[in-house]
Length: 300
Image (tube, rainbow, N blue to C red; front, side):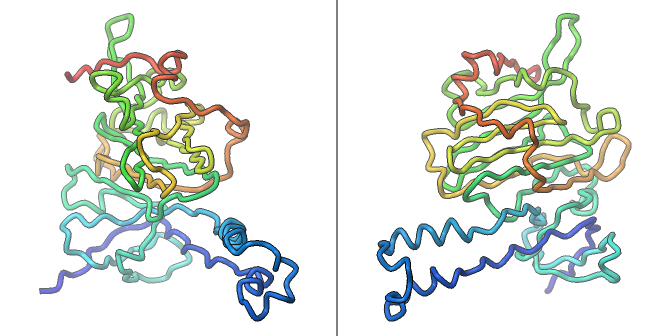
């Protein structure tokens, strides 16, 4: 029996991936009978292919893939909150990319956590992606997953401050750091304490998590609510050049006021504060420099 598409309220659709342009000169030099007329004819073919691949790589545009909570859905009806669309439309899940949606409309239960991932991996160049969400949990994680295994995770936690109160912090771990400490997680000192609220916006501002992914040098710089974090080298134990995907895990469907959790993603210009080149460092090097501090999970 066919499963009827479920209505999902989407605030904005993601732009389709652009079609790469093809340079006439590169095309001509790749055809043997036309190569003689090309000024690039003396270049080796592998060099030509390399130039073509980098010269025509389309700009990365992020969009979320709609999750399939029951594993059977193949399409969804979208109620589009946009003047660009006058009616509900049906889209195949495999082709759907959205940049803004309400999680309470996606999951089956208001008490169910949701996980999302960006539709397309980041494979080359220097790309800044920013994800905003109106509510997070202690279990919520924003993580980079490499195509050949391995990960880097930005998560949320709490620790006891000097007054004995719980201070909310952000923590960092990767697939190699479990060998460094028992729980493999460290406090990000640059983000301070009490800069986020459990399951709610903080001072009316949604949580904004930024990733500056550098596929040329193999590193990522984190950003949170306008604050710059560390530049973390990709784990040397994984083959990361195949690409990296961005995932969001364990987001609440509703906040503590029972409002649907809103989430959005964008590829804005790289913030000016991140424009300067920073030397990538491993988790252990960041611990030694004091950029990452000791973290003991209060839940343990």
